[in-house]
Length: 165
Image 1 (tube, rainbow, N blue to C red):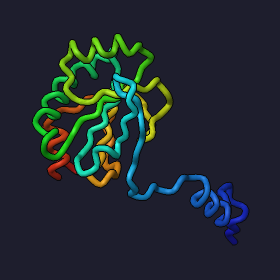
Image 2 (image 1 turned 30 degrees about the vertical axis):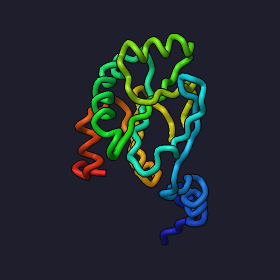
Image 3 (image 1 turned 180 degrees about the vertical axis):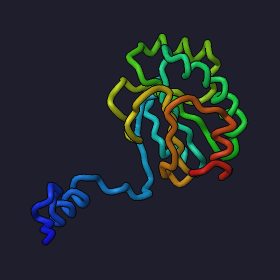
């Protein structure tokens, strides 16, 4: 006779406990928000941009792939800011505001740049590498995350529903 209790596997009740309590529930599609200082020390909220797609790009001045994608983000922001989308750059490093302002000017960054000291994560999720970009819908819902560089075309395709979500 085959006895399930003699197997080296957990019991059904133990499996139920593991599935229900050990793994966090999938978050509901609720609006996300955060507040970080801009280059002038003014607290800016993600919710200020409701009604538009928001591309939240975590980056650092020392990160080569981050530097490569800045022109793409500048172009995307310029062509969409008065229509349907904006870029928010979140500098994710320990740097003085003076150095950061100079960098932003040197790279002609035309989108709002916020500052955050490095941490394990952000209000939008874990940052496993730079650059990391989050896409927030016009209703404030987090809909996508990309670790690694993005292009203006990638963002446009996603917004237009041409990429798999």
